[in-house]
Image 1 (spheres, one colour):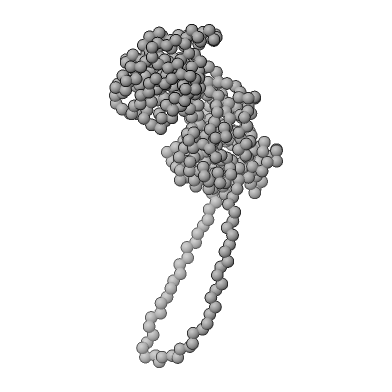
Image 2 (image 1 turned 180 degrees about the horizontal axis):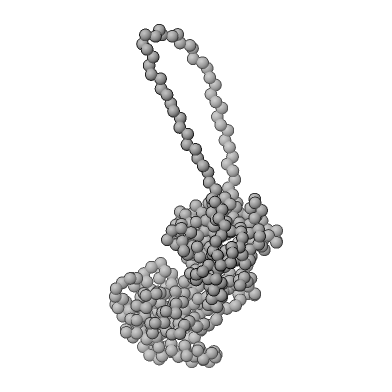
Length: 457
Protein backbone atom coordinates (compact mmCIF):
# COMPACT_ATOMS: atom_id res chain seq x y z
CA UNK A 1 0.00 0.00 0.00
CA UNK A 2 1.17 3.52 -0.76
CA UNK A 3 -0.19 6.43 1.25
CA UNK A 4 -0.35 10.02 0.03
CA UNK A 5 -0.83 12.90 2.42
CA UNK A 6 1.40 15.70 1.19
CA UNK A 7 1.94 17.60 -1.99
CA UNK A 8 4.97 16.53 -4.04
CA UNK A 9 7.42 19.11 -5.30
CA UNK A 10 5.95 20.82 -8.34
CA UNK A 11 7.11 19.18 -11.52
CA UNK A 12 8.03 15.95 -9.78
CA UNK A 13 5.88 12.81 -9.70
CA UNK A 14 7.68 11.55 -6.60
CA UNK A 15 5.62 10.74 -3.57
CA UNK A 16 6.21 9.29 -0.14
CA UNK A 17 5.77 5.54 0.14
CA UNK A 18 4.86 3.68 3.26
CA UNK A 19 6.38 0.21 3.43
CA UNK A 20 3.64 -2.39 3.51
CA UNK A 21 3.14 -3.94 6.89
CA UNK A 22 3.61 -7.65 7.05
CA UNK A 23 4.27 -10.52 9.39
CA UNK A 24 7.50 -12.38 9.75
CA UNK A 25 7.19 -16.06 10.35
CA UNK A 26 9.99 -18.08 12.07
CA UNK A 27 10.14 -21.69 11.13
CA UNK A 28 11.46 -23.86 13.99
CA UNK A 29 12.45 -27.49 13.67
CA UNK A 30 11.68 -30.15 16.24
CA UNK A 31 14.18 -32.99 16.29
CA UNK A 32 12.81 -36.24 17.59
CA UNK A 33 15.40 -38.79 18.84
CA UNK A 34 14.40 -42.40 18.91
CA UNK A 35 16.46 -44.50 21.33
CA UNK A 36 18.09 -47.65 20.04
CA UNK A 37 17.44 -50.92 21.87
CA UNK A 38 19.49 -51.40 25.04
CA UNK A 39 21.92 -54.26 25.43
CA UNK A 40 20.14 -57.53 25.67
CA UNK A 41 22.21 -58.52 28.77
CA UNK A 42 20.53 -55.96 31.00
CA UNK A 43 18.19 -57.42 33.58
CA UNK A 44 14.55 -56.64 33.11
CA UNK A 45 13.21 -53.92 35.40
CA UNK A 46 9.91 -54.11 37.25
CA UNK A 47 7.15 -52.11 35.69
CA UNK A 48 5.25 -49.42 37.59
CA UNK A 49 1.48 -49.22 37.53
CA UNK A 50 0.16 -46.69 35.04
CA UNK A 51 -0.45 -43.22 36.42
CA UNK A 52 -3.86 -41.71 36.18
CA UNK A 53 -3.87 -38.38 34.42
CA UNK A 54 -6.67 -35.89 34.01
CA UNK A 55 -7.58 -34.92 30.46
CA UNK A 56 -6.98 -31.24 29.72
CA UNK A 57 -10.07 -29.09 29.73
CA UNK A 58 -11.59 -28.47 26.33
CA UNK A 59 -10.80 -25.02 25.04
CA UNK A 60 -13.64 -22.60 25.47
CA UNK A 61 -15.09 -21.25 22.22
CA UNK A 62 -14.04 -17.70 21.53
CA UNK A 63 -16.17 -15.06 19.88
CA UNK A 64 -14.61 -14.00 16.58
CA UNK A 65 -13.83 -10.33 16.31
CA UNK A 66 -16.55 -8.35 14.56
CA UNK A 67 -16.11 -7.77 10.84
CA UNK A 68 -14.86 -4.27 10.07
CA UNK A 69 -17.47 -1.74 9.05
CA UNK A 70 -16.92 1.43 7.09
CA UNK A 71 -16.91 4.67 9.02
CA UNK A 72 -15.84 8.22 8.29
CA UNK A 73 -12.87 8.62 10.62
CA UNK A 74 -10.40 5.76 11.13
CA UNK A 75 -8.82 5.01 14.52
CA UNK A 76 -5.80 7.15 13.57
CA UNK A 77 -8.05 10.21 13.31
CA UNK A 78 -7.88 10.44 9.52
CA UNK A 79 -10.37 9.88 6.71
CA UNK A 80 -8.92 7.14 4.51
CA UNK A 81 -9.77 6.93 0.81
CA UNK A 82 -8.65 3.74 -0.96
CA UNK A 83 -7.50 3.87 -4.59
CA UNK A 84 -7.60 0.43 -6.26
CA UNK A 85 -5.63 0.59 -9.53
CA UNK A 86 -3.06 -1.55 -11.36
CA UNK A 87 0.39 -0.18 -10.52
CA UNK A 88 2.02 -3.33 -11.88
CA UNK A 89 1.27 -5.55 -14.84
CA UNK A 90 0.33 -4.67 -18.42
CA UNK A 91 -2.03 -1.83 -17.40
CA UNK A 92 0.32 -0.15 -14.97
CA UNK A 93 0.68 2.96 -17.15
CA UNK A 94 -3.05 3.69 -16.99
CA UNK A 95 -3.12 2.90 -13.28
CA UNK A 96 -0.22 5.26 -12.65
CA UNK A 97 -1.99 8.05 -14.57
CA UNK A 98 -5.14 7.57 -12.47
CA UNK A 99 -2.98 7.79 -9.36
CA UNK A 100 -1.25 10.96 -10.55
CA UNK A 101 -4.59 12.59 -11.34
CA UNK A 102 -6.00 11.57 -7.96
CA UNK A 103 -2.99 13.16 -6.28
CA UNK A 104 -3.71 16.39 -8.12
CA UNK A 105 -7.27 16.45 -6.76
CA UNK A 106 -6.06 15.54 -3.26
CA UNK A 107 -3.71 18.50 -3.18
CA UNK A 108 -6.26 20.82 -4.77
CA UNK A 109 -9.26 19.96 -2.59
CA UNK A 110 -8.24 17.57 0.19
CA UNK A 111 -7.81 18.64 3.79
CA UNK A 112 -4.92 17.75 6.07
CA UNK A 113 -6.96 14.93 7.61
CA UNK A 114 -7.57 13.13 4.29
CA UNK A 115 -5.35 10.19 3.33
CA UNK A 116 -5.16 8.62 -0.14
CA UNK A 117 -4.09 4.98 0.21
CA UNK A 118 -3.07 3.17 -2.99
CA UNK A 119 -3.51 -0.59 -3.44
CA UNK A 120 -2.18 -2.46 -6.46
CA UNK A 121 -4.84 -4.61 -8.16
CA UNK A 122 -2.36 -5.96 -10.76
CA UNK A 123 -5.21 -5.54 -13.26
CA UNK A 124 -6.91 -8.79 -12.22
CA UNK A 125 -10.11 -9.64 -10.31
CA UNK A 126 -8.06 -11.61 -7.78
CA UNK A 127 -5.76 -8.66 -7.22
CA UNK A 128 -8.72 -6.33 -6.85
CA UNK A 129 -10.30 -8.60 -4.24
CA UNK A 130 -7.08 -8.67 -2.21
CA UNK A 131 -6.78 -4.88 -2.49
CA UNK A 132 -10.36 -4.49 -1.24
CA UNK A 133 -9.58 -6.68 1.77
CA UNK A 134 -6.59 -4.50 2.62
CA UNK A 135 -8.69 -1.35 2.23
CA UNK A 136 -11.22 -2.76 4.70
CA UNK A 137 -8.52 -3.42 7.29
CA UNK A 138 -7.36 0.20 6.93
CA UNK A 139 -10.94 1.35 7.68
CA UNK A 140 -11.33 3.15 4.35
CA UNK A 141 -14.35 5.44 4.16
CA UNK A 142 -14.63 5.37 0.37
CA UNK A 143 -13.15 3.24 -2.44
CA UNK A 144 -12.01 4.61 -5.82
CA UNK A 145 -11.60 2.02 -8.56
CA UNK A 146 -10.99 -0.62 -9.67
CA UNK A 147 -10.45 -0.04 -13.38
CA UNK A 148 -12.04 -3.02 -15.16
CA UNK A 149 -15.57 -4.40 -14.97
CA UNK A 150 -14.40 -7.88 -13.93
CA UNK A 151 -12.43 -6.37 -11.05
CA UNK A 152 -15.39 -4.19 -10.07
CA UNK A 153 -17.60 -7.27 -9.96
CA UNK A 154 -15.03 -9.03 -7.77
CA UNK A 155 -15.00 -6.30 -5.09
CA UNK A 156 -18.72 -5.51 -5.15
CA UNK A 157 -19.92 -8.07 -2.56
CA UNK A 158 -17.09 -7.28 -0.14
CA UNK A 159 -17.62 -3.55 -0.46
CA UNK A 160 -21.36 -3.94 0.09
CA UNK A 161 -20.92 -6.00 3.26
CA UNK A 162 -18.29 -3.57 4.52
CA UNK A 163 -20.50 -0.57 3.79
CA UNK A 164 -18.16 1.72 1.82
CA UNK A 165 -19.38 3.19 -1.49
CA UNK A 166 -17.23 2.32 -4.53
CA UNK A 167 -16.59 4.77 -7.39
CA UNK A 168 -15.28 2.39 -10.04
CA UNK A 169 -13.63 3.55 -13.26
CA UNK A 170 -15.52 1.01 -15.36
CA UNK A 171 -18.01 2.06 -18.04
CA UNK A 172 -19.91 -1.25 -17.84
CA UNK A 173 -23.29 -0.38 -16.42
CA UNK A 174 -24.11 -4.05 -15.72
CA UNK A 175 -21.79 -4.08 -12.70
CA UNK A 176 -23.38 -0.99 -11.11
CA UNK A 177 -25.63 -1.10 -8.07
CA UNK A 178 -25.67 -1.88 -4.35
CA UNK A 179 -23.26 0.94 -3.56
CA UNK A 180 -20.98 0.50 -6.59
CA UNK A 181 -21.03 3.35 -9.13
CA UNK A 182 -19.57 3.38 -12.64
CA UNK A 183 -17.69 6.59 -13.46
CA UNK A 184 -16.73 5.59 -17.01
CA UNK A 185 -18.67 7.11 -19.91
CA UNK A 186 -20.80 4.18 -21.03
CA UNK A 187 -21.90 3.53 -24.63
CA UNK A 188 -25.48 4.24 -23.56
CA UNK A 189 -24.63 7.77 -22.38
CA UNK A 190 -22.83 8.55 -25.64
CA UNK A 191 -25.46 7.08 -27.95
CA UNK A 192 -28.34 8.72 -26.08
CA UNK A 193 -26.78 12.14 -26.51
CA UNK A 194 -25.98 11.93 -30.21
CA UNK A 195 -29.33 10.34 -31.10
CA UNK A 196 -31.25 12.98 -29.13
CA UNK A 197 -29.37 15.61 -31.14
CA UNK A 198 -29.93 14.08 -34.57
CA UNK A 199 -33.59 13.35 -33.82
CA UNK A 200 -34.06 17.01 -32.94
CA UNK A 201 -32.75 17.78 -36.42
CA UNK A 202 -35.37 15.58 -38.04
CA UNK A 203 -33.63 12.21 -38.49
CA UNK A 204 -36.21 9.44 -38.15
CA UNK A 205 -34.50 6.32 -39.54
CA UNK A 206 -31.25 4.91 -38.15
CA UNK A 207 -28.88 2.06 -38.90
CA UNK A 208 -25.92 0.45 -37.14
CA UNK A 209 -22.74 -1.30 -38.29
CA UNK A 210 -21.31 -2.89 -35.16
CA UNK A 211 -18.58 -5.39 -34.25
CA UNK A 212 -19.52 -8.80 -32.86
CA UNK A 213 -18.42 -8.10 -29.30
CA UNK A 214 -19.78 -7.07 -25.93
CA UNK A 215 -18.96 -3.47 -26.82
CA UNK A 216 -20.83 -3.74 -30.12
CA UNK A 217 -23.80 -5.35 -28.39
CA UNK A 218 -23.91 -2.53 -25.82
CA UNK A 219 -23.77 0.14 -28.53
CA UNK A 220 -26.54 -1.53 -30.52
CA UNK A 221 -28.79 -1.95 -27.47
CA UNK A 222 -28.25 1.71 -26.61
CA UNK A 223 -29.18 2.75 -30.15
CA UNK A 224 -32.36 0.67 -30.10
CA UNK A 225 -33.44 2.28 -26.82
CA UNK A 226 -32.54 5.81 -27.91
CA UNK A 227 -34.35 5.73 -31.26
CA UNK A 228 -37.45 4.26 -29.63
CA UNK A 229 -37.47 6.97 -26.99
CA UNK A 230 -37.28 9.63 -29.71
CA UNK A 231 -40.11 8.15 -31.77
CA UNK A 232 -37.70 7.04 -34.52
CA UNK A 233 -36.87 3.58 -35.84
CA UNK A 234 -33.86 1.33 -36.34
CA UNK A 235 -34.32 0.10 -39.89
CA UNK A 236 -31.10 -1.84 -40.44
CA UNK A 237 -28.41 -3.44 -38.27
CA UNK A 238 -25.40 -5.35 -39.59
CA UNK A 239 -22.65 -6.92 -37.50
CA UNK A 240 -19.13 -7.88 -38.55
CA UNK A 241 -16.07 -9.67 -37.20
CA UNK A 242 -13.35 -7.30 -36.02
CA UNK A 243 -10.07 -7.95 -37.77
CA UNK A 244 -11.67 -9.48 -40.86
CA UNK A 245 -9.60 -8.85 -43.99
CA UNK A 246 -12.59 -8.00 -46.18
CA UNK A 247 -15.81 -6.40 -44.94
CA UNK A 248 -17.26 -5.79 -48.40
CA UNK A 249 -20.13 -8.33 -48.06
CA UNK A 250 -21.29 -6.78 -44.78
CA UNK A 251 -21.01 -3.21 -46.09
CA UNK A 252 -22.93 -4.19 -49.22
CA UNK A 253 -25.70 -5.62 -47.04
CA UNK A 254 -25.84 -2.42 -45.02
CA UNK A 255 -25.87 -0.19 -48.10
CA UNK A 256 -29.09 -1.68 -49.42
CA UNK A 257 -31.07 0.30 -46.83
CA UNK A 258 -29.26 3.67 -47.04
CA UNK A 259 -30.69 6.96 -48.26
CA UNK A 260 -29.53 7.42 -51.83
CA UNK A 261 -30.37 11.08 -52.41
CA UNK A 262 -31.55 14.36 -50.95
CA UNK A 263 -28.22 15.47 -49.48
CA UNK A 264 -29.95 16.06 -46.14
CA UNK A 265 -26.94 15.11 -44.01
CA UNK A 266 -24.78 17.76 -45.69
CA UNK A 267 -27.59 20.32 -45.45
CA UNK A 268 -27.96 19.75 -41.71
CA UNK A 269 -24.25 20.28 -41.15
CA UNK A 270 -24.28 23.48 -43.20
CA UNK A 271 -27.34 24.71 -41.32
CA UNK A 272 -25.65 24.15 -37.95
CA UNK A 273 -22.43 25.76 -39.11
CA UNK A 274 -24.43 28.91 -39.83
CA UNK A 275 -24.98 29.35 -36.11
CA UNK A 276 -28.69 30.19 -36.20
CA UNK A 277 -31.01 27.41 -35.08
CA UNK A 278 -34.80 27.64 -35.24
CA UNK A 279 -37.78 25.32 -35.22
CA UNK A 280 -38.52 26.31 -38.80
CA UNK A 281 -35.03 25.42 -39.86
CA UNK A 282 -35.25 22.03 -38.19
CA UNK A 283 -38.58 21.34 -39.88
CA UNK A 284 -37.08 22.10 -43.29
CA UNK A 285 -34.50 19.35 -42.73
CA UNK A 286 -36.85 16.66 -41.45
CA UNK A 287 -37.39 14.88 -44.76
CA UNK A 288 -35.81 11.56 -45.74
CA UNK A 289 -33.89 10.34 -48.74
CA UNK A 290 -35.76 7.08 -48.96
CA UNK A 291 -33.66 5.12 -46.44
CA UNK A 292 -31.84 5.46 -43.14
CA UNK A 293 -30.49 8.96 -42.62
CA UNK A 294 -28.01 8.28 -39.79
CA UNK A 295 -25.54 5.43 -39.28
CA UNK A 296 -23.88 4.49 -35.99
CA UNK A 297 -20.25 3.34 -36.34
CA UNK A 298 -18.89 2.50 -32.86
CA UNK A 299 -15.49 1.34 -34.19
CA UNK A 300 -12.37 3.45 -33.79
CA UNK A 301 -8.82 3.73 -35.07
CA UNK A 302 -7.71 1.82 -38.15
CA UNK A 303 -10.81 -0.38 -38.10
CA UNK A 304 -13.02 2.69 -38.40
CA UNK A 305 -10.90 4.12 -41.24
CA UNK A 306 -11.15 0.83 -43.12
CA UNK A 307 -14.95 0.74 -42.77
CA UNK A 308 -15.38 4.40 -43.69
CA UNK A 309 -13.36 3.99 -46.87
CA UNK A 310 -15.74 1.24 -48.05
CA UNK A 311 -19.02 3.03 -47.32
CA UNK A 312 -19.02 5.60 -50.18
CA UNK A 313 -17.83 2.92 -52.60
CA UNK A 314 -21.03 0.99 -51.90
CA UNK A 315 -23.15 4.17 -52.06
CA UNK A 316 -23.46 4.95 -48.36
CA UNK A 317 -22.74 8.61 -49.05
CA UNK A 318 -22.00 10.97 -46.11
CA UNK A 319 -23.81 13.66 -48.10
CA UNK A 320 -27.03 11.71 -47.60
CA UNK A 321 -26.32 9.72 -44.43
CA UNK A 322 -25.03 11.32 -41.23
CA UNK A 323 -22.26 9.19 -39.71
CA UNK A 324 -22.41 8.92 -35.91
CA UNK A 325 -19.59 7.76 -33.66
CA UNK A 326 -18.50 7.23 -30.09
CA UNK A 327 -15.95 8.86 -27.82
CA UNK A 328 -13.15 6.95 -29.57
CA UNK A 329 -13.72 9.29 -32.53
CA UNK A 330 -12.10 12.05 -30.48
CA UNK A 331 -8.98 11.85 -32.65
CA UNK A 332 -8.24 14.61 -35.19
CA UNK A 333 -6.14 12.13 -37.18
CA UNK A 334 -9.31 10.34 -38.29
CA UNK A 335 -10.07 13.30 -40.57
CA UNK A 336 -7.49 11.91 -42.98
CA UNK A 337 -10.31 9.66 -44.17
CA UNK A 338 -12.60 12.03 -46.15
CA UNK A 339 -15.77 10.01 -45.47
CA UNK A 340 -15.44 10.66 -41.72
CA UNK A 341 -15.24 14.44 -42.05
CA UNK A 342 -18.52 15.87 -40.75
CA UNK A 343 -19.19 12.89 -38.47
CA UNK A 344 -20.80 13.56 -35.08
CA UNK A 345 -20.06 11.95 -31.73
CA UNK A 346 -20.80 12.66 -28.07
CA UNK A 347 -17.97 13.35 -25.62
CA UNK A 348 -17.06 15.71 -22.79
CA UNK A 349 -16.49 19.33 -23.73
CA UNK A 350 -12.77 19.48 -24.65
CA UNK A 351 -11.97 22.81 -22.96
CA UNK A 352 -11.81 21.56 -19.36
CA UNK A 353 -9.81 18.55 -20.52
CA UNK A 354 -7.28 20.81 -22.25
CA UNK A 355 -6.72 22.75 -19.01
CA UNK A 356 -6.38 19.56 -16.96
CA UNK A 357 -4.09 17.90 -19.50
CA UNK A 358 -1.77 20.91 -19.62
CA UNK A 359 -1.48 21.06 -15.84
CA UNK A 360 -0.88 17.31 -15.62
CA UNK A 361 1.92 17.59 -18.19
CA UNK A 362 3.55 20.42 -16.25
CA UNK A 363 3.56 18.31 -13.07
CA UNK A 364 4.50 14.91 -14.47
CA UNK A 365 6.34 15.65 -17.70
CA UNK A 366 3.95 13.87 -20.07
CA UNK A 367 0.44 14.13 -21.45
CA UNK A 368 -2.10 11.96 -19.62
CA UNK A 369 -4.17 9.19 -21.20
CA UNK A 370 -7.80 10.16 -21.64
CA UNK A 371 -8.97 8.04 -18.70
CA UNK A 372 -6.88 10.08 -16.26
CA UNK A 373 -9.70 12.60 -15.82
CA UNK A 374 -11.69 9.91 -14.00
CA UNK A 375 -8.99 9.72 -11.35
CA UNK A 376 -9.19 13.46 -10.72
CA UNK A 377 -12.98 13.60 -10.62
CA UNK A 378 -13.28 10.55 -8.35
CA UNK A 379 -10.79 11.90 -5.80
CA UNK A 380 -12.42 15.33 -5.94
CA UNK A 381 -15.81 13.77 -5.14
CA UNK A 382 -14.18 11.93 -2.22
CA UNK A 383 -12.65 15.14 -0.85
CA UNK A 384 -15.89 17.11 -1.10
CA UNK A 385 -18.04 14.29 0.32
CA UNK A 386 -15.65 13.67 3.24
CA UNK A 387 -15.52 17.37 4.15
CA UNK A 388 -19.30 17.71 3.98
CA UNK A 389 -19.88 14.55 6.03
CA UNK A 390 -17.44 15.64 8.71
CA UNK A 391 -18.91 19.14 8.98
CA UNK A 392 -22.39 17.63 9.32
CA UNK A 393 -21.32 15.24 12.06
CA UNK A 394 -22.01 12.14 9.95
CA UNK A 395 -20.34 8.87 10.87
CA UNK A 396 -19.82 7.68 7.28
CA UNK A 397 -19.92 8.79 3.64
CA UNK A 398 -23.38 7.62 2.69
CA UNK A 399 -24.87 6.77 -0.67
CA UNK A 400 -27.52 9.44 -0.08
CA UNK A 401 -24.81 12.09 0.18
CA UNK A 402 -23.16 10.97 -3.06
CA UNK A 403 -26.50 10.86 -4.89
CA UNK A 404 -27.11 14.57 -4.47
CA UNK A 405 -29.46 15.46 -7.38
CA UNK A 406 -27.68 18.73 -8.19
CA UNK A 407 -24.58 16.69 -9.10
CA UNK A 408 -20.99 17.75 -9.65
CA UNK A 409 -18.97 19.61 -12.26
CA UNK A 410 -15.60 18.01 -13.04
CA UNK A 411 -13.01 17.64 -15.76
CA UNK A 412 -15.50 15.70 -17.91
CA UNK A 413 -18.38 18.11 -17.33
CA UNK A 414 -21.45 17.75 -15.15
CA UNK A 415 -22.46 14.38 -13.73
CA UNK A 416 -24.55 12.91 -10.96
CA UNK A 417 -24.89 9.48 -9.38
CA UNK A 418 -28.12 7.54 -9.81
CA UNK A 419 -29.53 5.20 -7.11
CA UNK A 420 -28.96 2.21 -9.43
CA UNK A 421 -25.22 2.97 -9.56
CA UNK A 422 -25.16 4.40 -13.07
CA UNK A 423 -24.10 7.92 -13.94
CA UNK A 424 -25.92 10.71 -15.72
CA UNK A 425 -23.55 12.98 -17.64
CA UNK A 426 -23.81 16.16 -19.65
CA UNK A 427 -21.90 15.61 -22.91
CA UNK A 428 -21.30 17.82 -25.93
CA UNK A 429 -21.86 16.80 -29.55
CA UNK A 430 -18.61 17.22 -31.47
CA UNK A 431 -17.95 17.24 -35.18
CA UNK A 432 -14.86 15.86 -36.87
CA UNK A 433 -13.47 18.37 -39.37
CA UNK A 434 -10.38 18.45 -41.55
CA UNK A 435 -8.69 21.06 -39.38
CA UNK A 436 -9.70 19.61 -36.01
CA UNK A 437 -12.71 18.88 -33.82
CA UNK A 438 -15.37 21.50 -33.10
CA UNK A 439 -18.27 21.66 -30.66
CA UNK A 440 -21.45 21.33 -32.67
CA UNK A 441 -23.83 21.31 -29.70
CA UNK A 442 -22.50 22.45 -26.28
CA UNK A 443 -22.70 20.31 -23.18
CA UNK A 444 -25.43 21.28 -20.68
CA UNK A 445 -24.21 23.27 -17.72
CA UNK A 446 -26.64 22.09 -15.03
CA UNK A 447 -29.20 19.48 -14.00
CA UNK A 448 -31.43 21.01 -11.32
CA UNK A 449 -29.22 23.83 -10.10
CA UNK A 450 -25.57 24.87 -9.79
CA UNK A 451 -23.31 21.84 -9.50
CA UNK A 452 -20.64 21.33 -6.85
CA UNK A 453 -17.45 22.34 -8.62
CA UNK A 454 -14.69 19.75 -8.38
CA UNK A 455 -12.03 21.58 -10.35
CA UNK A 456 -9.19 23.20 -8.45
CA UNK A 457 -7.67 24.73 -11.58
